[in-house]
Amino acid sequence: MSDGTVLKNKESWKAYCLLIPTLIIFSIFMFWPFLYTIYLSFFDWNMITPIKKFVGLKNYIDVLSDRNTYKILGNTFIYIAFLLVINCIIPYLFAFVLDLILKRFNGFYKSALFLPAFISLVVGSILFTWILNPVSGPVAIILGWFGIEMPIWSKLDGWVILVLSLITSWKVFGYNFIVLYASINGISREIIEAARLDNVPLWKIFFHIVLPMSSATGIYVFIITIVQGLQYVFTPIKVITQGGPNYASSNAIYHAYHEAFVLYRTGHSAALSIMTMLIFFILLVLEFKFVERGIYYEN
Image 1 (cartoon, rainbow, N blue to C red):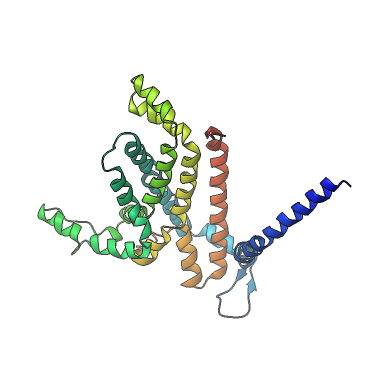
Image 2 (cartoon, rainbow, N blue to C red):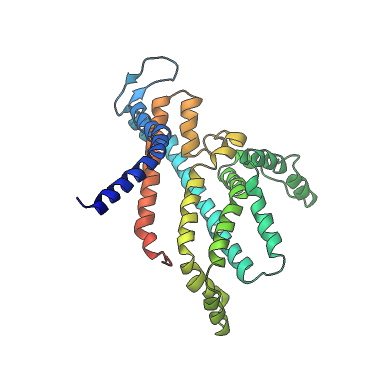
């Protein structure tokens, strides 16, 4: 074996050793909880008694035979759809306008849009609960001046999901916007100026130049927006509605929490969690199959 090969193997072992702390952390906080969740999904356990009763696939059958499961999964996809529009499409347009069209007070607008990202979503949820109070909130009072009665949105199907999506978006909109803005700002100015000199309409510049050349960042924002639809919306649900009325505002993540830590049906919660993970995995596979192929990477 040559000295070069020995040196290369030695360097490889150094790299593997440096990965060990990360692997340990991942094993403790990700892999082991995941495997333990799979294990619990085959048992009936209330987290109090020391004995777990093996029930096989019963928890999965119960989840699939429960009508509320399909309602909650539907809610989850509605949350994702709302957030994709509010937190992916609209930030793209804002970033395009601020970078290429609106030059005055550019820094102020960026700071104002990003500022809510520093505020806790719990605080934001409490704040919006007061602002949108249908009886005594500022919005209800202003609408009352015009003879408009504000609906009790927390008790209405559809409305409650929309409002909770808006509250979540208020928190995360700025982060998505600033990431997309940085990506658009990094596009070669020569290409855009050449298009403008040829009198190419702005909408064509957006769809044929900006969107393709920033698509690598766009797909990142697309994926994290789906994650936000699954996870971030948990906080306003917990703070404001607790999944009500009649599961109308619950999503898959909150319902798994509710089953485990409110109803103490750990096996049922674990089965729902595994199914939610599979749904998320399927979404990622579809994304890579149908969306990723059209992504532009500069290098």
